Length: 207
Ligand code: ARG
Image 1 (tube, rainbow, N blue to C red):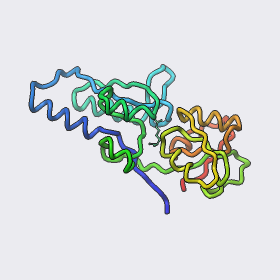
Image 2 (cartoon, rainbow, N blue to C red):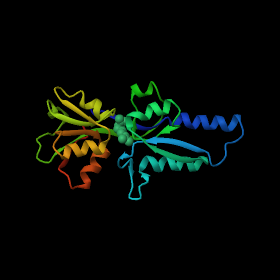
Image 3 (cartoon, rainbow, N blue to C red):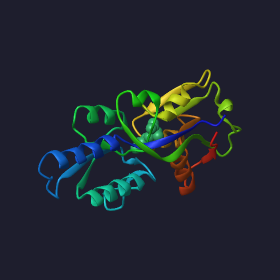
Image 4 (cartoon, rainbow, N blue to C red):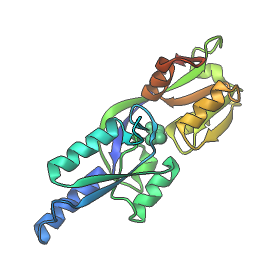
């Protein structure tokens, strides 16, 4: 069966309810109060660094629109994906918007908003590769971003050697350099990478 999972703006519900509570219980917050949002801006089209060096992308636009609606500024901090939930828990961040998939495991420690995008894991292999499905990755060297659902999926492939990287860009670079046979990552990110051209990638999936 196809395994589909929703990506959520992590902890957004928590942030919203806290803000509502604050507004009712105490004096209304100043209009220039800030929501500190963590992301990992190596994940186009959800978040990336644009040509002006600014953090941009779908998640960023959504968070900014929410901030505007509520009268809050939104400030993004770019950090490693694997550090996001820890920073949220220690209070360094108010929310995370990083294309983070809602999983049962993560739900144990953080609150998610409703899902807003159906994410599916898919594969990138080189154009001349015979791979047409996950099962063909058996025994292969698979690259994945550390701590992501792509890594969790890769770890289930029998006999595969999973090599992890801090972000999607490094993972794709290693693939292009021949260090791994395939990469498992969220569909829109792989589709974006392949569509950009200038690389040997071919999209397989979503499966
Ligand atoms: N959806 C995947 C996950 O939650 C990958 C997210 C990676 N996001 C990022 N901004 N680098 O595990």
